[in-house]
Length: 196
Image 1 (spheres, rainbow, N blue to C red):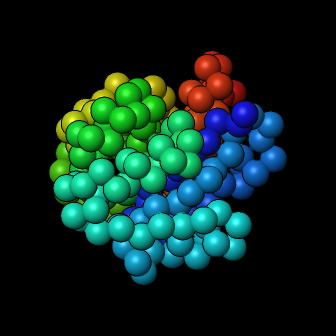
Image 2: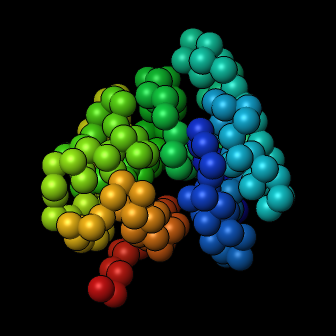
């Protein structure tokens, strides 16, 4: 039986698309559902075009009822991937999928993490602080924003000419290159050693 993956996404979904495409030809894992808290998220269209079922939910369904957990269990989901998902994951979901929820953050944690630090807000803060490098952090999810165990980081360098927009492009390239492969390594208990 293939390992079943569910993706949670709040926005455009470019990472979700890369993950779905990566696992379409995979022998031992597949994406079976994309869920969003935003009915207008373009991620939903990306998933539909790639033949992956979608589900939209609200705050009450997510945080105050067992509906989402039950649906994931009924589908036989083994792993949950947060790909640009902005809500804090509730305890019932974390308890139902222990050590099986993975998030990506567009900075080198523990710096520039926490509530409200996502997307362009992160890149703007990094550029404003005149940092020389930034990157991505892929980490396990616990009960606090961006505090779970880090499983992988990749860096990029900033120049004096970089803006939040140019940094965003560098970060997205790192995300697309590494995120699907790190997920693959995690769920298949392999080591991921990118050639730098």
